[in-house]
Image 1 (cartoon, rainbow, N blue to C red):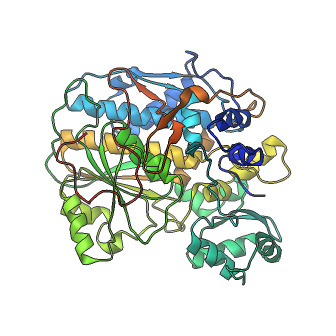
Image 2: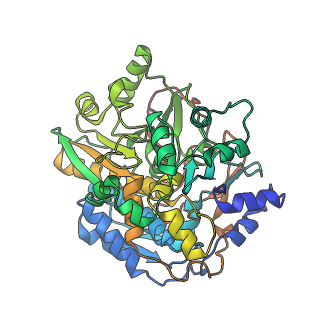
Length: 505
């Protein structure tokens, strides 16, 4: 079974709906109580927000400025995906406002409706009326001799590597050929062989099987996210704010990410006023979602394998407040851009690191994406059981990616607030597996597969972009005084020079 992202995209494609009318079909594939505009406060969300807030070391009195409405279920799932979306989005926006307060602004109310937050995390968009297929034909689930594996093949080198492991040629192989060969493999054997080659594959496990794994035990011992002071430094002051400016105005963020969670974090920071410079390497691939997640960002090309390009990066770092990265563990360290090295280059910087499985445990260096982490940690089998499905079932959106992205944005704002008050250089760590552990801790939604759909149309907005006319969900975090918006167009990678703007937006 091939997973859809979201499932409604294939529904739209089969119906021939490749136009701006697609959101009406999207609504049919989503579920919820349609109560996103109600003022029913989810105490569960408030409690979870308080727990995240405490991890950032932020003052509890600021929590009184969060207004959360709605309750799960809002999408077809037995898990509290709406709560995860709402809580992580609220945490990011409220922390940004708290940073604004540290910089002299009055606190302001942040309101997040759960239906809007959930739809934002679905990540649906169209370009010139066309809905792109985000999945390579070889990506998805395969039956093995003793269970299932999921292969992530969206990047050509990952696809070709998986096919080579199966003894197939990337030039002639079809999906059915891969399925035929995999029926002779055991799931854990194929997962291990793929990991040895640096590929992205996960065996499907039950919750019980995952709980027995050493990596699950390492994840369970860690908090949802960590903020660590990694060096002494004076406070890196930011420009003063007017009352009408967005709370992150003047914050300079380097974003070295490419898939979903990191780009969502950068997009969020940009909407709240930060100058975000997306740095791509010209030889590395991207996915189509970059058109949606690049809203509000500057975008440059740098190849850090080259000395002159590293000098350009060092010039950016020397004037940056934040460095976010989501590359495979160890990749940037090898090039001289690990957290400690960055703290030496730019004392007082906030470094944010995203990983698939966390900083500790036997899988700390393993590659992974949302769909694979869902599979490895038990969600696909648990969701199928709740739905009465014969085959493993994915969550209705890549909630691990999206929630992790908002948690990264929260970590940026919280760590920078601490930096302004206490000095020091800071390292924030977020992982998809820790977010998965958090989602599971929320319990199950018994009525998750039986509710009616929220209408996405009120939350959609059309944006000009360097990719074409972009239709996508606007920010769900509503700031009372300084609304979130994107002051820059989404543009293709490498559009801008690697230079910070003289005057922040």
